[in-house]
Image 1 (tube, rainbow, N blue to C red):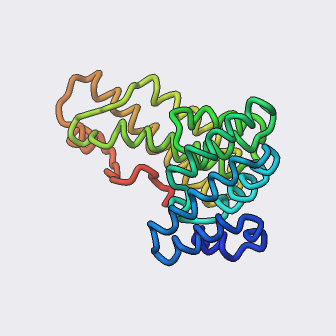
Image 2: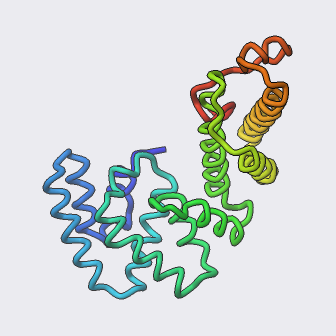
Length: 233
């Protein structure tokens, strides 16, 4: 994917938002102070516009985000907090069956309710929302990794019930993934964490010490990965 700044600058509709385009041009040149002045001007101008025009901007911007990388170069705090979050909140209030604000909130904005937004987007959009599905999968693997990332030191940081729930969620999402290679890797990751969780339960039930040694004695071989997207690289 192309850098977000290049995608915005080269987009044929960017001239509809000329001050925002100027912000991106300045950012692309490394002129941080000047770029934020342009962004402030754009935010003040957009706030004066009616809701439809603000929604048009958001629709255009988030559609670019969906096919870009390094979006943090554009999605800075003032833009997120002063324009995008208030706009999406109002959008949801006015049209709670529109998938777009839930999807964008879950995919791109900082929120304690990220998973809730993603699940709502999945409920409304189903398996056609592949970006939503992949982000949910990554979030669940993120949580599983945190639970187990010190397991080789006999330190399990999770909840058995919560991690079983996450594995069940991953199993539910797997058939919805359209990319076959990703699906294969996903299933490998599910098997990995299922086996690891079950073996940890057995290890604790036996009252042993030294999980790595216990695994070797049982003929269990684990790749003690540092990266939480096991099998998804």
